[in-house]
Figure 1: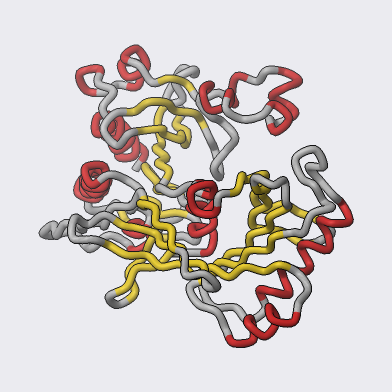
Figure 2: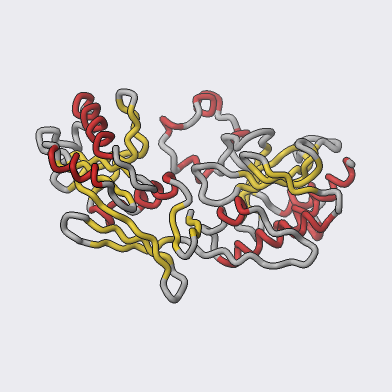
Length: 336
């Protein structure tokens, strides 16, 4: 979520900034979020919201200074005012509120703001860390000077120095900040367990993931990165437990980085499988059509329990993550 630049901290991407602001929109701006990344007439609005007076609120976020942010907001308003979605919640007869959030503003932004007839509000943001290593996001209204501060769920990553082991890829380190300190260290221990198992195991960096094995196909484990996930997603190559024989498949692992909670066979990419509880939190109109039509159970991740651990050959029938990783390592070695 955050990266250090010199002595300062900043969001690793505009998406990371958007995610934090969207999750805390009410305490930060006293407005209610209606939708993120709303598409309207070829434009994509970062955040569409409504305030207590039923006014339309459009929020555009920039991780760096951008001299064209006022023009963007104007185009978004033009599209929304014609389409008029959420007509029950929004009173389109009232003036719109266009909110620009950025670390700083170019002088051209203030010129554009001065001469437009629309209500455009500028907010700057700043990330800070206090003496207790708690991170904070401060939002400041440029016109009034009013400030709002919220805590960030981010922990600075302490990278251990392990003799005989290279430093972890920066991509992995940057993805661990949203995890508690103990879980961060568990991830590093998992990496050490894999790389120390066999000298033939390599750490292979691809645009989407960090894999462990030989070449681009013969892997035993993988840290997968997705823009909508704030932490790495673990995959392990394990026996296909519903089949007999020695067939091995790529499995997504849901874990607290101590035990395995759920798993699902996902041959490529991120897959669509989710635990049942996650499906229940998603509106049914957003479920995959095939799931609705046939109730496909392969889209539901399986709870990981002792019987499955025993079937896979986990040591002491344990559901611990290290025991399951050990199975993946042993099966990888057998395939060599």
